[in-house]
Image 1: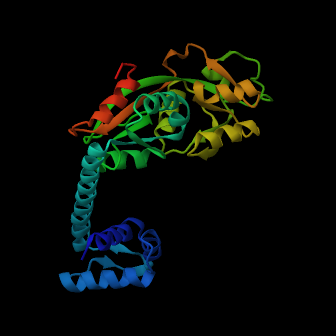
Image 2 (image 1 turned 90 degrees about the vertical axis):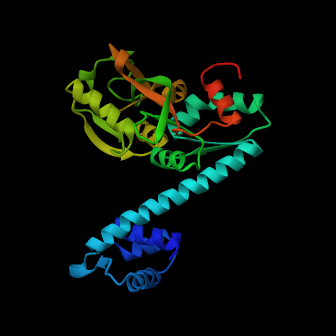
Image 3 (image 1 turned 180 degrees about the horizontal axis):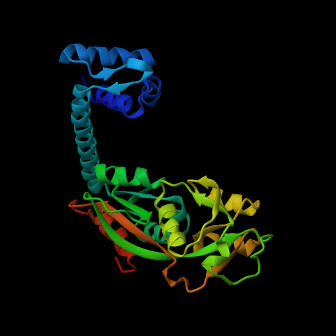
Length: 295
């Protein structure tokens, strides 16, 4: 029994599918079955119930799943700590950020850091928020820069900025030419949204609900660039950070209007790091630049 076998078993429980567990671990479906059978023989218990076409853990399987998850989590954290310690010695900094923050808000800070501290090898990864949280907690990443930071007992959050939210639409939309709009102007409009599992979507939904605005969500994306593309072909309008649409507005590809009395229509951006982890010199220098201080 090893970490890979434990991970495959957890994937099997999570997905309820032998084929998906096999695909996630790059092995055959029969290999998953063989691994399971071997574990059940060694433990002398049934771990998975296969009745009625369903794949679900037995009571013993649930107990084993919980323990396996803890082992995997600790193993990944250990690997992250070892890599982090080695990186600190070598002068390596690993930072993850979501697309909409990395390409706009964070970019000038990254350029300044690379110019000021060429001795540090900076690894930037542009990815989804869920991946960043997991990587920071495990130690795979030193820092994460995310929108609408969410509380987690293993995460320390450092506020970075508040991005103004605006209404973005096609130059052919009826709102074109308006400098400002009220939340009520959005009622009934076709809306291009972030996916529901993305913090920015939940943040915007709270604002819409607060102002009693109901929109018609016609399509959802996990990527702000795809949202902007959908807006440009008149799929609907959206609410996005102003800095993310200023360039396209300058080219005439998109237009935007600020929200009246919109002081609270902002998207918070923060830096996340693992709570209790001693920052390396490279991490301290990067944070110093983000805070606008001399390093």
